[in-house]
Image (cartoon, rainbow, N blue to C red; front, top):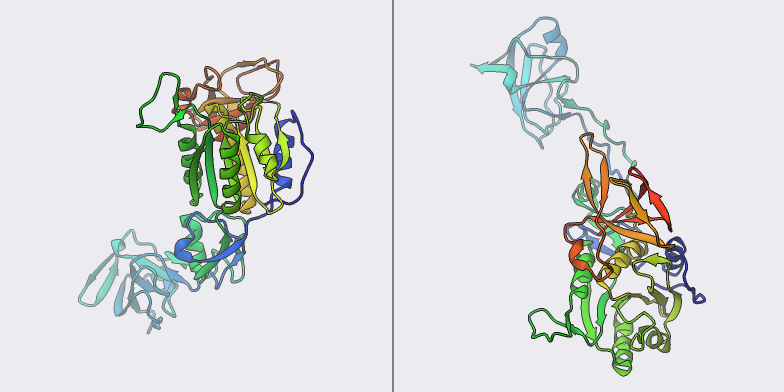
Length: 409
């Protein structure tokens, strides 16, 4: 995924950090998959309409097909000539005195230009009578040919994430297989001697290994399927050996912890000893200031995130997920515009990331209610939040209605 190396950058702003990451990633390889396996994948080819859509004048209601001129002229009784089901070749109307019983999805019979639904007719002894409320006007209850798309029209553009509607569109275009982005092999690596697995005995001076579970869950929730995990203690030799193996077997490494300035923050020096070129280390933001990013000449990407859980999840959503989507060719941004629901004072001279809950007023407008944490270690306060907003460097008094960007978890 790497392109070229860059010099180490310290205390850059988030916009520059995002640009540097994007500049050092290239799109992931393309693979061809059967349509049934493409849900959640990123399309890497354009899909065009195989035929007009609909490909014929399509009957939109169960009922009778007839010539509207006869009904407009006053005729209310019609002889039922035949029945035509969906998937059958179209019949031809014998005369204006006749009608053809018709099913939803069928091709409109030749000579007919109108369908009266079964709810508006009475049928007995081979005759159909129009009820008083029945309307028989030209092209009533008929889905006209090519009214949706013309043959050859662009239906899906490269970079589209394939959900249920897009899969249906591709199927309608006759695509048995699609060219999509390959899934990167990602490993989530927690570091630190203090971390203990859930369910294991724990000492008073230890903490649970929770960050890795959150990061892996977020990756899977956003459609990344090839996600594995590892945990490495604060030991340079162990870090060197295990990271060397992961760099050979994974396209993306996401490390948690060990990137600050402490004596046991060994991750940056071990990565550089393994030939990972540092692109950035340190972003002028709170939380998540010590974030590290680098690449290898073989195309591996390494994101080393701060170990405090709020910082971890913020950096994941602000940088890692957008970078992975961009590498897969996704066209759209993940952030959205939103207004603050309450006034907010932001004093640090750094870009701020504030967790929020999203609600809607009586007009359906979204609002972001700030949910301050008790520091970057207070992960419990993130429960039931929807994401975070990006605040400009302070000191600043942000009023209710201040428009900013929302990043969802």
